[in-house]
Amino acid sequence: MNEVINAIGRRKSSVARVYVSEGNGKIVINKKELTEYFPSAILQYVVKQPLNLLEVAEKYDIHANLDGGGFTGQSQALRLAIARALVKINPEDKKTLKVQGFLTRDRREVERKKPGQPKARRRFQFSKR
Image (cartoon, rainbow, N blue to C red; front, side):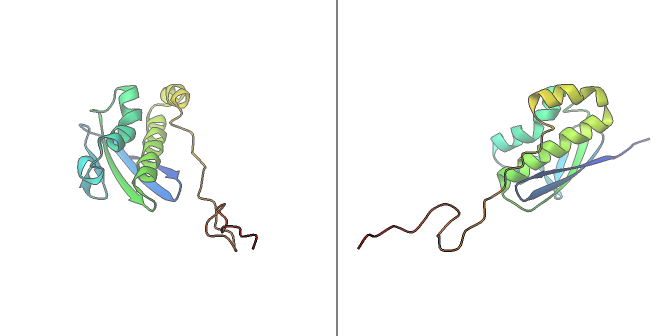
């Protein structure tokens, strides 16, 4: 029996939906390989952090749907979703992942632009005369 565990992760305006099943370590994002979707080695490392921490990188196949945001936010949303799915599979891993901060949703969002200013906090140059 090949059971599929699903989880969701968010970061900034990115949403990652993850489906984890037993396999041999294949990660597919939006029907593309991990190396094709995230060419940067740093982002690939971020995505694999929870798997490498628990030493289960070659044990599970991961299918993910990523939506919204930029590549950094997407990779971090995916990391959170993978960590949550791993806790669903084996609840004993929760403490290990929590200590590393992989189960904490980073709730920082972009501050809105204010009227009468060019950006959220930047003001137009002040002129006395």
